[in-house]
Image (cartoon, rainbow, N blue to C red; front, top):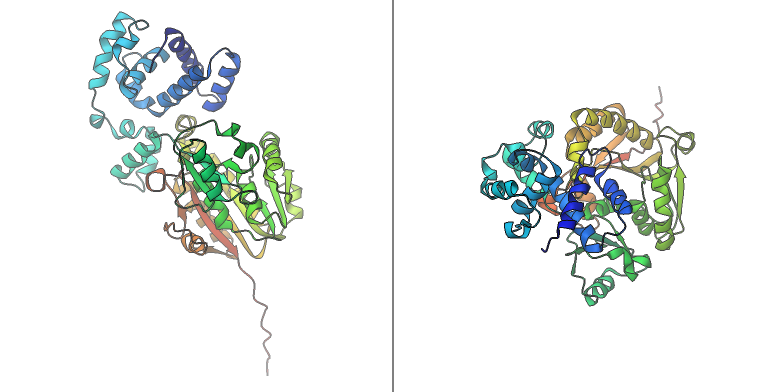
Length: 428
């Protein structure tokens, strides 16, 4: 790694801009790069990777530096986690910094408190300790400190997975078939895939393997009425449309116009014609009420803490809190209740989050079922096995970066009971 004083100066400014974390880290960095258009591709990569690296290891870094500043965090990170030699920093670092930096390498991480070793804030460790031993919390934390792979979903309407893999390998892009998703390919590096002809022609989309499995859990069939209730930018919507062979009606509902607008170019590339984009004001919008009881399948990828995505979004552990989880739980329960109203008898609903906290997951489902006895819980492992997908996590789908190399996903599958006709009793 060859570092110039100019790169290091820019990195300090970027970290200073980032660290209040009033907005998502990727949005802050995007804006920083827009405001610094002269930065080259290498500089941008270095700044982005360093900033995210500091967020991943922030608790440890803040613990070992005497005075926490963007500059001291940068130096400590480079020396401790990037193996940068002190000689490489001599042209930039001050004499006093050169003196304390060797001590950074000597600090033993195993002697630190659990929250620092796992790089998880105290409030989160306390929550995890209710249902997880410390050793598991540490393993989970360590797995979330790693960088996530770049996962692709092959649009099987336009291409076959084996052909796409072959084409990527021919272009010297290291890739392999995913272990679980029948339409997934995992890249072993981070190429600019959004410039590749396969991406531009709609044959591939970027999508985590865990997210892909949600589509197979819902298992929509051609000709059905299907809803993606919290569609966002539509990654799962596009997969559902593909599984339906572009037949039937697929509604993409979301409260955010901006997110739905991001779906439009993706939809154009995909070749799908059965998707209907609908912005709603909230989960109780009149548009939803009018469609009550009309749907065969509904996917609810609920707004959540996102803690299962810390490999990609390490800033979330600083932007969420015990209080924000309480607010999310109320929203999740309300959304699930509204979405369930869309289902016809015999219909299937998948409730999913990218969180590993039971209060956003199992507890939401338990509360919903207590109030709605007309819904049965289906076994997720069995549903996936029907499609020759082997993920044995039991009744619920529970994926983790530690065990499955995916984001931390949770899913529950509910079916609305088909009511039997009332029996006529003859009184003799």
